[in-house]
Length: 184
Image (cartoon, rainbow, N blue to C red; front, top):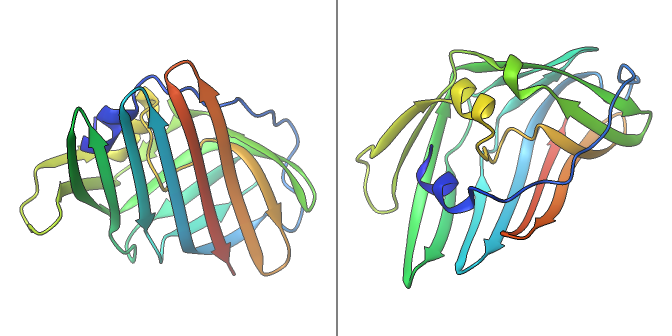
């Protein structure tokens, strides 16, 4: 589990529904231009941004992430009276089965247990190039860990040139909000 994910264990997302293959506007290859994640709960908070350049390819029954040109994700976390900044560098590829429902807007639901690939994440503290943790992204997704660039469920809106994925949810442990913006 990543440094940031340790803070968000227990935050439960609102489940989405999906059953039909994606329509023309969601199908295809997209490039991430921006992401924003905010998690807060019982004495902790986490905000992340970055990841620009991630390639997302949406097919009828799966999605593929290519992290070969992904910029670092940076974040600020606080909990138990401590505040610190972190970074995550993703590399290689990840594929997850799932589907989208809707035409220009709708819901999507991926199957985390089907995550596979060579994608790796390296994490460290801001101001240092030292890698404090390295893990396989597929393993983290399968366990249900929060990965800022891999939304496994939520809502989407799209046009021929833009795609936005979002998730907002609450649980007794806290709140989570994630937005990912892509372009063709």
